[in-house]
Image (cartoon, rainbow, N blue to C red; front, side):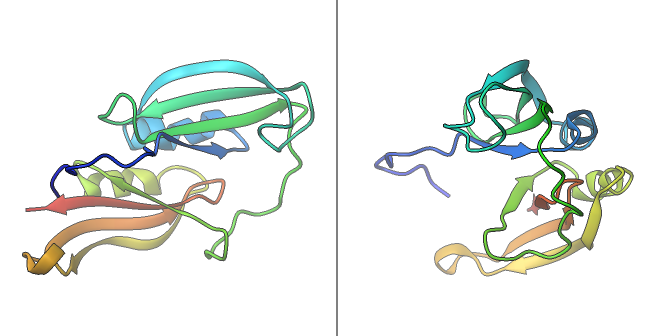
Length: 163
């Protein structure tokens, strides 16, 4: 891909995931995927701008980034006092309103094996080679990757672009 000749008006800055146990989530996002923690603080939310919890809810917010210091961050937020009601078991299939978090990594086979060791991670696809048609008639795009749900039900496609 080439840098666009003209910038679009919006950048994707961050996806924040509401989690049951932020320390458990950090075992995946920080320790396995290798994202860097750049913010970790208690935050009191209004219950308005972020329509969850109640006014004055205490939360913990951790922000992580990959190689770009400004774009593509992942936020993890746990509602501490009071906690959000448990929604029941995390999903095992995607449905409308679901989302797919696609991440590119340095060694998909290794990191997929590491992810398998995190409690609550549920795999849907073991590491495998996938080949996609090239852009604009270009060469095929070869990707090694796996797919799984994190402990809270976020679906992750973990890829390594080959060649």
